[in-house]
Length: 207
Image (cartoon, rainbow, N blue to C red; front, side, top):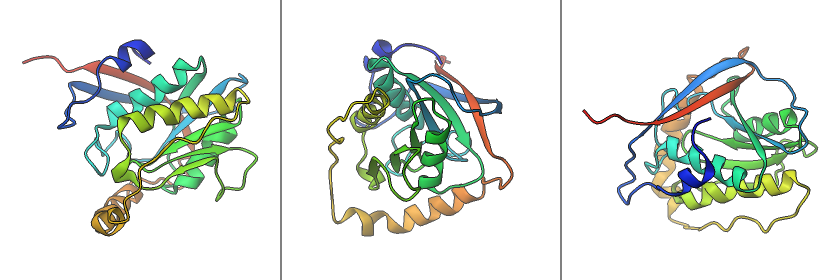
């Protein structure tokens, strides 16, 4: 992982949500259970950064990842990034990440932005925190998700991340969300399992 929490926090995306950073995710072998009690595992969906580069509301995924990483690092917690290749189901992604984490705490994020903080001892359809309205999730929220997951990993009970609610959001984005989900499922590999990822974030070079 490149950069540190302070550097990541110094440059958020602009109002048009453009970014001058590029994201490179390289598979580094089958993911195993961690042995660090302060480790949080972040599970990415099959097409995150592989096909999709933005959330449903055009937030760059490179910035999403940076903010989650920064939120965890600010709490002094190790964060490992994996790709869950065998499902596009958010609960399964987040629960799979939690089961790999030394702390038992995992985060799941779909390409469109929908997110969840999970704990290994909970049922798959339960969670510590769920963020279902992807169009309303901004970078501040993603940073707070990383921070809260880290605090759970330390055995604390943080206040839930505040989220906005818009009853018009679902009908406005429902069709687009369905199309994005269908595209995401095209990248599912039923026998693909979960793999560790090496994360590289760099600035685009000026031409």
